[in-house]
Amino acid sequence: MRSSVLFSLYAATLVAAVAHPKDPQIVLQESQATIVEPDEYLIELSPGETRWVTEDDKWALRRENINFFDITHNKELGTLNHKLSTESVKFPSKPAHNESIVPLLKELKKENMRTHLETFTSFHTRYYKSHYGAESSAWLLEQVRKTLTDAGASKASVKAFPHPWGQASIIATIPGKSDKTVVIGAHQDSINLFLPSILAAPGADDDGSGTVTILEALRVLLKSEEVLKGEADNTIEFHWYSAEEGGLLGSQAIFQSYEKEGRDVKAMLQQDMTGYVQKTLDAGEPESVGVITDFVHPGLTEFIKKIITVYCDIPYVLTKCGYACSDHASASKAGYPSAFVIESDFKYSDNKIHTTEDKIEYLSFDHMLQHARLTLGLVYELAFAKFK
Image (cartoon, rainbow, N blue to C red; front, side, top):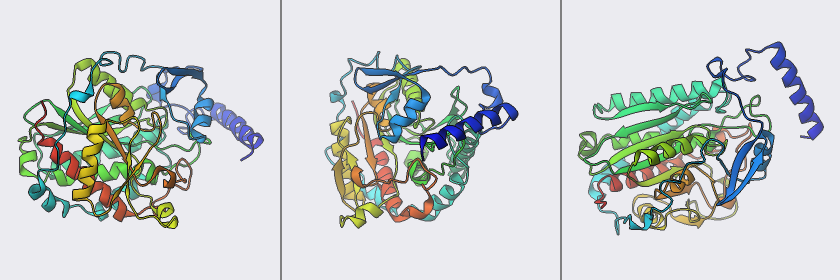
């Protein structure tokens, strides 16, 4: 779209905002009326490389596939744990709970992921500053709560982690015998990078796919009596982050709070985009799980490769995504071992994201099932791992 057309649309939007100040697509929610957005935001493009930019600049960078932390309100992330070495965290040499996990894998259902994703993508957008973003988060919170209730998980809990922009992050906790914690994450927000407040952003792949993938893994994990009764060695958390698209805002807030509280997070895995395989197949390459190798914890990543080999029906491919490319980066910056898996080699990942065309019809639920198998296998293995 030409810039002149964009400017005309933007001008028309401003007029509409004046004429209809309660239009939820244009203004912040009434509960956020006291929030004053800054004229510029401080972003971090690589370690130590910062820049002040406008919000339009942020979206322009994202359109050029340049990722960043928005550290305007998160400058303290990593300052307490910056000398903490994650090398001391040792992961199992190989998967050790095959007999318990294999029966659980058979309980994963593609139909559940499809049903949830159909509703999740029916919101006009899940843009974190829109009322749709708040509504979709409330809907997701209810699905997580229902998952815990249906499982009879009386020891487990779920809560909204509020943010000033309105869309809350979500944290589900399954207590174990220690406070050592294993985190599985995905981001719930979506965005259309041309006019975020106006244009549709179904976000089926980015990251509706990851959202429903880990939700299904949570459902089946709770079929384990040991996990359900709190007998796992470690505490388990499932996170659905708000405002990833704005510069990892939700995950930064959560891990900044964990760092301040002295939380002992032993591992964090991010599932961001788990459903698109067409470009891989068109290139004549085998369907595979993309294991990110840059800006991640090598020990955790090595263990994930072993998990895929044992519990998935497809191989993995090693790939890179750059600095601050998803929410695992917030965990890493806070001093916690983190890793990231994606639907394919990064060069074959979905090019329809951040547009109106990021739709369910382009996704493979068979492939998402493989990511659910990975998630379930990893979280169970690490739940019973003997961390020091």
